[in-house]
Image (cartoon, rainbow, N blue to C red; front, side, top):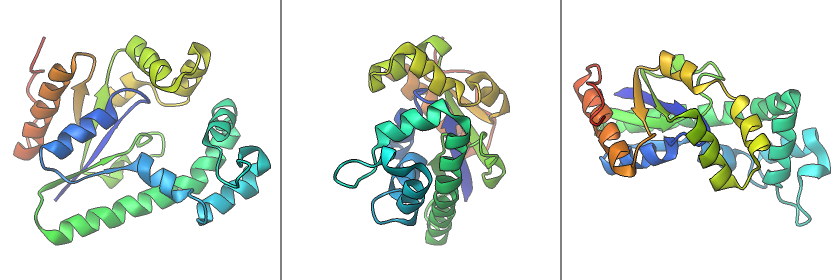
Amino acid sequence: MVRVALTGGIASGKSYCLGRFAALGTPTIDADVLARQAVANGTAGFDAIRARFGAAVITPDGGLDRDALGRLVFADTSSRRALEAIVHPVVYGAIERWFQTIARGGLHAIAIADVPLLYETGHESDFDTVVVAACRPDQQVERLMARSGLPREDALRRIDAQLPLADKQRRADYVIDTSGSFTETDAEVQRVWSALKAGAPAPPPAYS
């Protein structure tokens, strides 16, 4: 079974592409979902975050204040790295177990994990193939602002905390251009999906 990592940048269209791959019949898993599970109330991850960051990231009812935590870690590199040290081992462990389960089932030749910080965490060698979802830089900023309500300065800070999309595209085995319409992006996903199944390089984009 081919282990595929789908990555990119924040607001670059990864989740949409993951949904399209799932609709084509491939097993998928989302590291962002796993990360939320890793720090849910009652987990060791939640306890570690409370111990490291204190009451400032805990809501009045005792839950995790994700907005407060986000503001903290994107403003301070050491805090972000501390959070990643708590969350990433749990997430990658869960992804590995998931791949093993899919492989034992013997029903699928390809399985795809959406891993936003793949290159930043140095885990690309865990996978057989890497697909990057990418759009224009100006689109990335606008999309992040629209979906999060963040002001431009904060949106840029969060984007700058990741490896530039251009660097990820250069390192990828396949690139999905998400800068067009949904129909065009669907064609891009199909183009890469066909190449993955064939074990071949992806042909040129399906649209101009």
